[in-house]
Length: 307
Ligand code: SF4
Ligand code: SF4
Image 1 (spheres, helix red, strand yellow):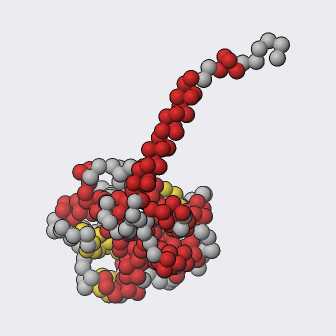
Image 2 (cartoon, rainbow, N blue to C red; image 1 turned 30 degrees about the horizontal axis):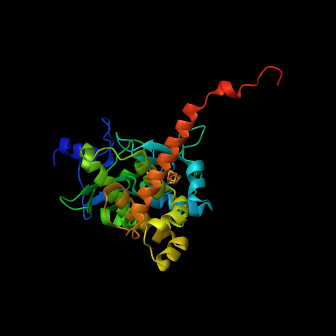
Image 3 (cartoon, rainbow, N blue to C red; image 1 turned 45 degrees about the vertical axis):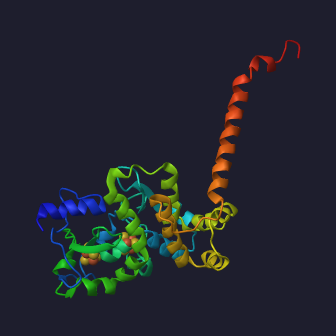
């Protein structure tokens, strides 16, 4: 693959390919070998955590929020900042650096303070990954590449291992499996480009909640209005109420339905009609309200002299 093709593909899949990129334009497979070792004795220890730009995935947020004993809503508010993942404004979330510097809030002298639950991007570094959708399927195929930044001395360490071994060592395989359905949703949106049109603001709101704010999504799923609309059996409801993993999977099914019209969660009989009827009534009420406002003349309510 030519360098130009590589960067084109990178741009298509991760949304950016900076001109002065530290990305090495060589696509690696799982059995390709890399030379890299990061450990506490390297002279650059912690340097990569001093100037962060870390995009978070749904599973990252789940793991970090649970580790910190926070709800996902609290975690998002305290530790993240929003950004737009593409030109249409698809919502993304990044780890928010410290107020006084671009360093990560979790870095300490002894290393990462949330190491066992660190985000996928931290696990992968200094490897990068791009998901590529297989032709005519929703399946995502991964390709890997090296990110070689001048400050990172791990590339000079005399250790060789395959991409597969590195991923397993860092726990990337577990994170990728948990995020797989979400990556498919994002990639489908990206590769469909402007032909599908911009999703509505409401769809983006639902995307944000289902992707990142799983506790708020749980409240939504357990609400009466969701239950009235979707035909979900009692056993599934019970699991969604207590099992984060099951809820994350369900959230991705829901997103495929909301964004792409895939029938992943059955509707209750008559639910659509009831929803349309409710919407019609709401519109009528609003109409009536604005008509009343237009008829209203404040002069008649003004206090008369001597009141
Ligand atoms: S989460 Fe940990 S590994 Fe990732 S940037 Fe922060 S301190 Fe570094
Ligand atoms: S070797 Fe690279 S990844 Fe490891 S601490 Fe140094 S800069 Fe960070």
